[in-house]
Image (tube, rainbow, N blue to C red; front, top):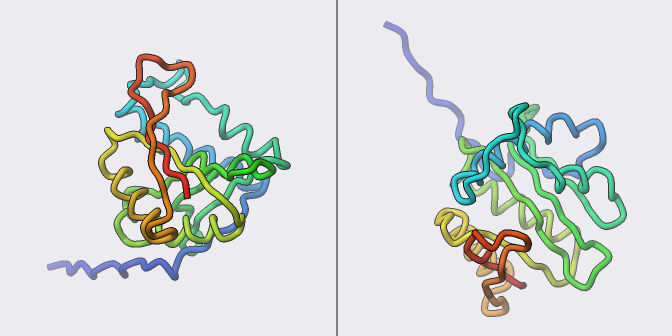
Length: 173
């Protein structure tokens, strides 16, 4: 009889959040495909004929270094998520994209990672999500409560160029 040993539970302190470099791009591109696949449930996007999804934000995060900052999250040698911050030179930073692999969701790693990313760029922030993505809606409202209790707002804004989609929800902290 074989015995399965329980896997060590990953805790937020096990994750490393660091600025992604050009050497990380291929890894982040693979995580990007998982991210876009997850989001396709809410916007109905299909992959391109080559199996990829649109990647303008990914491209901008790695080429517009003055106004964007890509981050990679790892646990040991394993890539487990990423974040793209834009508008670094503007009045409000925007958390443009944020992803944690499904196997580590609801472990506290996402909250830990977003806190670290936000701490690296002080000032006002905006974060968008879709109401239809119930897990993301709960997560981002919890983040807002944790980092700016009683000091955040929420509004709905149309998705630029996509009148067929419901408005995005924007949290400002």
